[in-house]
Image (cartoon, rainbow, N blue to C red; front, top):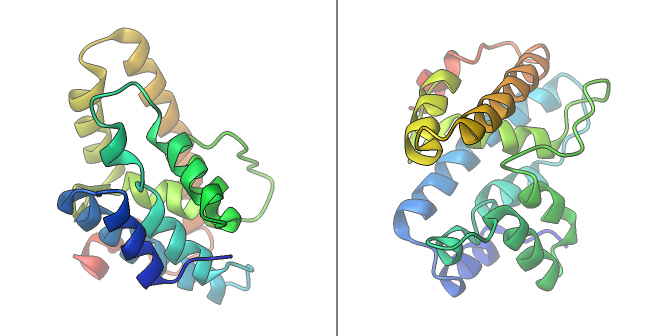
Length: 180
């Protein structure tokens, strides 16, 4: 089952999602929706419902994992499964790092959410470079192994960006103006 918007909002409240994380999730959904509609126009089979729900639910466990070492993506995937939303569980579980990325396949919902999340800093659409800068400052804390891991993830994200936008009639830079 794929949750509708009201169910996603209800779960955000049930799991105590902070307002700033809700705002981020709604902005990620806006970015993902624009991308998914464009991808659909290029005749790639994308579920707009999965994209909407995956974007809204991608940080469902973030608030509860703050201050702990628990991975909010994995916990979010578990929450989706517990609530019978298995269709979006993998999308939520891989929104930080794509574990099953296949550059030879068509663009899919999981890649759209992964990419869209990287384009939203708090509730502002930004470039990948600006988001990378923020994440390195916020999370890497000059720890070399974390810096390398985050940078490696963003190299993959740039590959995903190239794949996504090869199917669209607008550029990554256009997203900022299209969504604001």
